[in-house]
Image 1 (cartoon, rainbow, N blue to C red):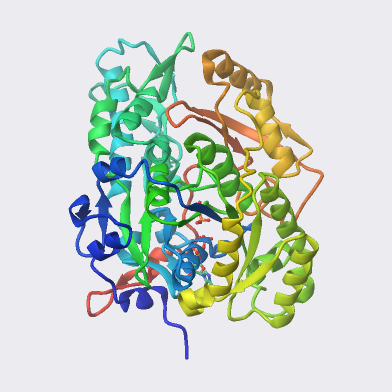
Image 2 (image 1 turned 180 degrees about the vertical axis):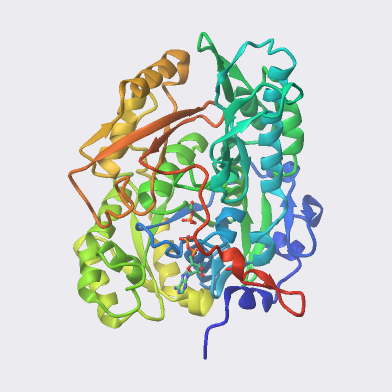
Length: 558
Ligand SMILES: Nc1ncnc2c1ncn2[C@@H]1O[C@H](COP(=O)(O)OP(=O)(O)O)[C@@H](O)[C@H]1O
Ligand SMILES: O=COP(=O)(O)O
């Protein structure tokens, strides 16, 4: 029988009232702000009340370098939590919210898939509880106030050639990457080059995902650098007096969202930075709250372990004082084949040799995760086309790497299909050796931090950066930002900056195109190769297949 679509499965879910889901975690109904019957925000008051609880075990789900469709990190995160609950563990999901960009572009949503989804998947993949709209508004309020400040006399002496604060929209729109603002004459202000990024690349998004509470949020917002003067001294958001109003716009967005899996297990869904252009992790407030309420919290970080997992460890864990007890590294036969050199349209037939050729990519990610002092379990996310020979090839290879690969069929079977994975992951998590450490110390120089990531994680020979970039990093160190971690922005398809160099390449350099100081979020963004902070739509966007059917139900969301 043909598998139902994700949205059909989600629509048929037997959801419980969100208050019952909260009760599973000890959240009283009056500490939930409901958004309908199946979504709610958790109150800051309750979050403050449980801050003293003992932490559960934190489990990170990452993956090998993915195909364009993604290898099932969110799906495995949800399936693993359902599996853990089936074996009697009190486990919760912690994932990111979906951006409308990939939803209507190519990649799809962020609610998992098959019988391992969070619901209501359509709400979650569309407007959800409005967090992304709030972030977009707050970001663009600041942009409007900057140009307005310049219009009314520019008392801060902003150098209009050095306004670094761009605008955002939660959509893939390449036409907005580079624009000229304030055209049309005197009443429209002073024309200058400007542009848009996608909302998930906004520093406001990063701050919402790293802040502990509203006070911390406002302080970080105020600390964002928005422009420089001619003497190159920074102008902050607090100089524009925008931080208060931005915090008002973000008041509700700051509170984590609670929904449920298809098997009625709790799922925190909050924040949504991409991992190729931002730090790629869900919010600290959701993760730390979940750890106070569940014995096992399973979270994910975007794209492959060279991006999301590295930034989870070196940015999120460092800043929030977290550490993963175990990492689940998702591999799929299809991505192994792609890393073995096959094209994205050649992945549906058996090719054991291609799987074997892709193994070094998996091996490098296993070594990288272990280099953070964290044990790893490989989850082979089973697809219907996978053959026994292909699966065996992965298992045999993983064994040579001193790890173990466990086949998980959560997509097709829900939690029942992930019981073996859940059993093993819980065992490893309970043995948590507590040896986690980031791969570079705070007091290492910024350029040296970039080199450490490039050489130790990507296996690059060198970092290529012109003198202007090196001088900019030195200047930020002199201004007191030298202790910040690095947020690498590069393609998700390769360890290199060339999306076509799959597998485990060596003998390459990492070209740095631009560096941006996210002084509010507290990291330095290093833009490598051709990666864009405003993606474009594909030739046939998913949007063309998204519509309402005769019953008014949504079709085409995945
Ligand atoms: N085992 C599987 N079989 C078939 N499709 C899957 C499987 N796992 C995930 N998918 C689908 O692949 C896409 C990407 O899954 P997702 O969990 O979003 O990946 P990631 O979080 O790594 O980007 C989704 O459409 C999902 O439904
Ligand atoms: O930031 C990217 O996340 P996914 O890997 O979930 O697409």
